[in-house]
Image (cartoon, rainbow, N blue to C red; front, side):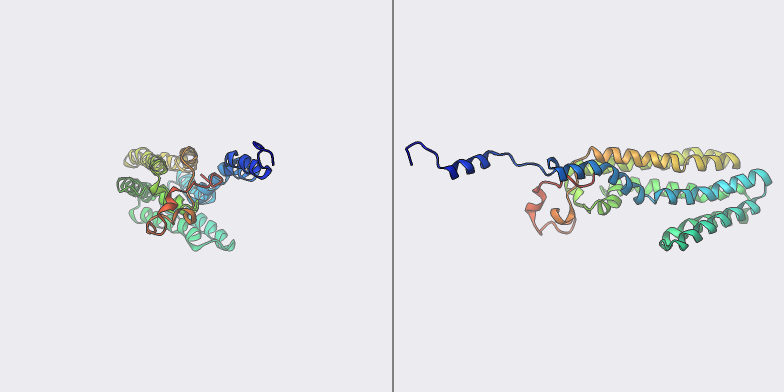
Amino acid sequence: MKAGEEHPRAAVEGTDSRRPERDAAETPEGGARAAEAPTDSALSLIAAFGGVRGMIDMTVPGLVFVIVFTITRETKSSSYAAVAVAGVLAAVRLARRETLMHALGGFLGVAIAAYVAVKSGKAENFYLLGVFISGGYALAYVVSIMVRWPIIGVVLGPILGENFTWRKNPERAAAYTKATWVWVALFVLRIVVQVPLYLADEVTWLGAAKVALGVPPWLVAIYLTWLIMSKAPPPTKADDGGGGEGADGADDSADERRPDTGSIR
């Protein structure tokens, strides 16, 4: 070989060494996963918060109650009608072999609300349980933020496959905190609107407010949650990042690994 002539193999290796490492998201397969991520994330969020069907099951009995009460002005008949509708919805879920929690959860809530209304003889008390539930949720979400375990992260982390690894990522933890505040605002909005109507004995308007503050704001909160999380750093999968809390000593270097850019945000 002549002096100054580069060995073919060395030239090839040199070219390879200068080639930048491609990110997984730049490959066709990674790009496809990244394109599908927003849709998958939105579906995961909807499922995590009970699904559209769950919100409908919670809304329809209250709508039936207010319609029957507006026509008859009778608390008992309105309550019985609401319980009957809730029973039918629960039976449909059972027939579809859905979990007992989903099938009976909504029915029990309506049954308790109807019992309180009939027992007290006040139609507005049908909605009292919902007001207390919204207050309880708002308080729980605020407390979760104060202790740095935002509920949205606790709920979505396992669903998105990252478990609690987000707690080691300040930017992602901040995003979960911001998303949790969105839900606090939703619960507070329900309380602010419904309590004055309850105190004024405006049953029809209270029922209308209950329906209006059901699915529409719920979908808005889900969209805002998705928007916030889509701008956050991608999650580190639990099997890549040590599994979150309780596995800090398993592999310290795992925290520095590059997150899977094709994962759901």
